[in-house]
Image (cartoon, rainbow, N blue to C red):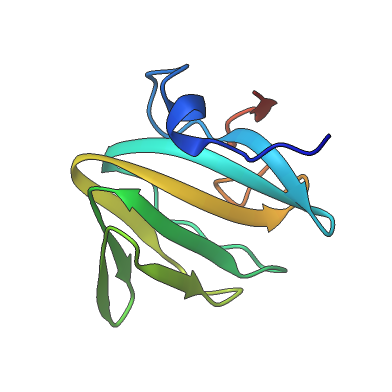
Length: 117
């Protein structure tokens, strides 16, 4: 029988920041829960958009021409090829959706290894 993905329960199983955990799949995309705090690296994804939904806290996404601030429940999609840097002043919890295998830094050599939980 199918079960709901309980992101709050999944997020309670780890404490590290900037290490997305795969919690499900959707049409060839990974559904990932992640805890973030501080600044991530400037990066882009040449072939895919980058989807962010804030589940808890707030996230600022720096862009070359400004920034977008997200609060709980907000969604933002960074268009493919656009440089961006996510920043969380305090710990925030996010849902990310990316094509399976997309490196979180845009570069497989520097990306966090994604594990399913």
